[in-house]
Image 1 (cartoon, rainbow, N blue to C red):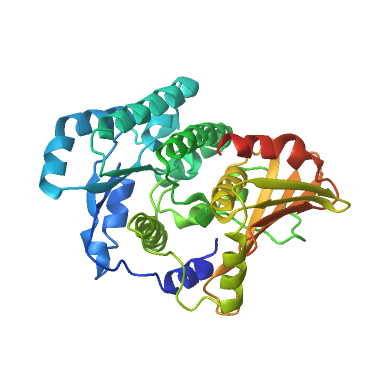
Image 2: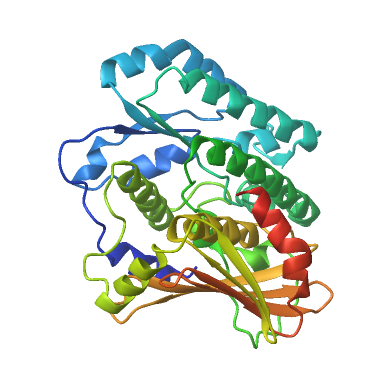
Length: 370
């Protein structure tokens, strides 16, 4: 997103947590978490605890929790912990040169990180009143990091960035599965980096930098102050949902609310209907919420070798409540189609010139997350 859109998002009101605080929110992360802590604002934010450490991998994180979790929970009582690790697993850092490269065995790195996440989930299992959420890894850039470190030939890292995006996608698919088992949803961070282009853009490059706005990072990895504030608000929004609050602006239009209430009356299922224009999927409100998150996450991290998806959000007249998400897909072979998610009526509609791949490929991958 552009800085203008991110600033607009930050100005939108967030429903406060009312009543007695039930869970203490904790962000457990590598050095990225420190950048969020620097953007603490007065109010509820100061209740967030930050357990962050530089160069923390999932293995180091698991070890730290094994040594300290019981004591920390005993001190804080019930917690809602957000695990934001994985960046340091997929890349290798040379402390002498400060250059970063892709992990020499990235497939093994994904498997190790996934197993560590599952071990963390097992570690938290005895604490039934605590909540655990794994935050998906947003895209980051080896090339941009090495540019900041003044590497003499950073073009060699373009292909590494492309490969890295595929392994981030694989890791996030695994995170999504674990979160589904836990009954939680990761705050969506990738969409804040999406580098939207107009439909008339002549840019046909397939570089990762064409898909994401890495200028929102300080160095290709760590968020700048603006993005850190946005990330913090996303985590806070998820915490509000876990606390039982409604993550819906209080001035949402009455018409939109009525449509949403109508959708809650449907039976728990998804209805598929093929039309002349494409495919229509309708679901009950709870199922659609899962479908929405899974669909957006799938297209956010779509590998470059498949194609490029541009995601746009439309609000109601109050400019606060999102009522529609439009995903414009252009495959590498040139085929195009559009996915519209109508949030108030809990309906997904696919249309365009070539919608068949959504049914043949995309929806199958999306269903794996459900």
